[in-house]
Length: 166
Image 1: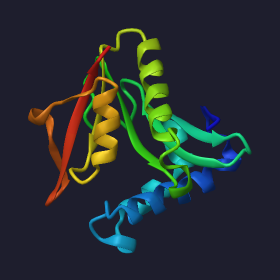
Image 2: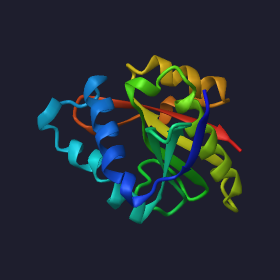
Image 3: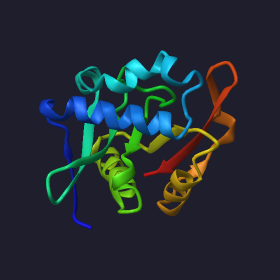
Image 4: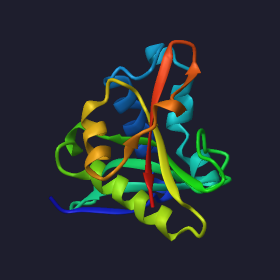
């Protein structure tokens, strides 16, 4: 399948926000479902783009089927990254884009960006325990679990962490 990874265009922000919200809701990743306060942050692609780099996965026919936020060191969107680490967040792929390599292509693009940032030694991420397909992608690409950095952004939501030495 022909997939292009590129910077999200402002005209695509709403579409990507919807894809991200639907993916998190559909996968049961939000503690409070439709009432989860994090849903607004997932939909706020313009806000993320102001503080980090938002990438999209686009099919050959021009449809956006996924996206990710790449946060360089110092970005307000870094949750767990240290001074010499970049982080990616809010990786989401629409149902019609799953199984086509969009998720892996987005992760690879984040790896490439992290390698291009001077002084970055690791790329890190947080994920939920119930995302085995994503975990397989991370591990296939060389990410290693870092359980000592697992954390809870809200009570009873444990996030697993992974890191890739660059």
